Structure formats: structure tokens, C-alpha cells
Image (cartoon, rainbow, N blue to C red; front, side, top):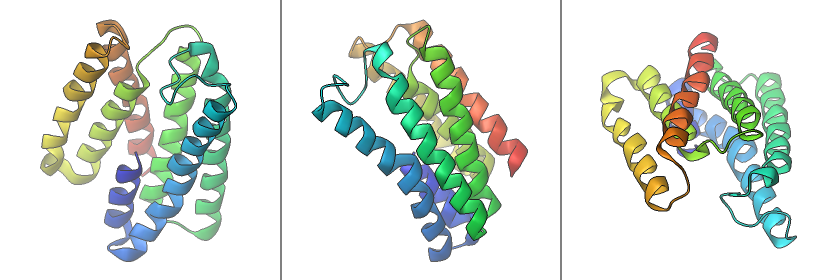
Length: 172
């Protein structure tokens, strides 16, 4: 996710200026949410970094959503490139969709992120991003081997990634 923000940032404004926008977005979309989970683990409110216990996902995901909203406000206020802002909004919508599903069913967030990332890379970079499509079955395979998800949870997670890609496509 952080890599995607950096790549889209670099692409959107060309070079280091775009990279700076990607870094700002990555702080609110990647670093803060990671810190929230780690703090939850230290305080015993979250069992592990993957938040395998479904009922434990709500608070970290809500805190992450708040961080992303704050990031969007900053990006808009500072005049960030539209592709970066569109990507962060898409991530927020994807997070909200995942949160809505995960309340009732343990969908694969990993595959949702992989699916959305690959689709957005294809939208931004075209056919040059096709090799990234290998990420989807690799992530799914790893989650299946670890017995973290069923095949249905992996497929539905990947499909849910299309929500973020659709929002990105509409906003850019």
C-alpha cells in the first residue's frame, strides 16, 4: 500500500515532488494505521498484526479510517495532485467496504489490498503493470497455506479490491 502511494505520487507529479506527496499520503494511510495496530497489540486489545480475531478489527480499522480522512483533508488543503488524492479516497472507501463486510464475515483484507493495488496499477501504468497481477494468487496462496482464510474469503477479498479501483478510476 505504501509502495502504491509512492508510485502513484511519483507518476502524478513527476519525480521527487510527486514522491513527497506519496510520502505524505503514506504517513496517514500506512504508518499511522500500523502504529495503531502495534499499540493495540502492546495493550493486549489486538492479538496479532493481522488482527485475526474479527471483533478486534473494528477499533483499529475505525482509527485508521480517521487517519486517512485527516490525510485527505491535508492533501486537498495543500493542493496535492488529483491522482494521489483520488488514491487515498479510494483507499478509504475500500477500508469502509472491508469494515462493513468484516463485521459479519472474515474476508481477506490482504487479498482486497492486493486486488485493488493491481487494478489501480493497471489503471495508472497500463499493460506495463501486468506482471503485478501475480501478486493476487501469491498473496491468496500464502493466506490459504497459513490457514488464515477459505478460498471463498480470498476470492471475495480480491473482488472487494475492485471497489477501491472503481473509486480511483472515477475520481482521477
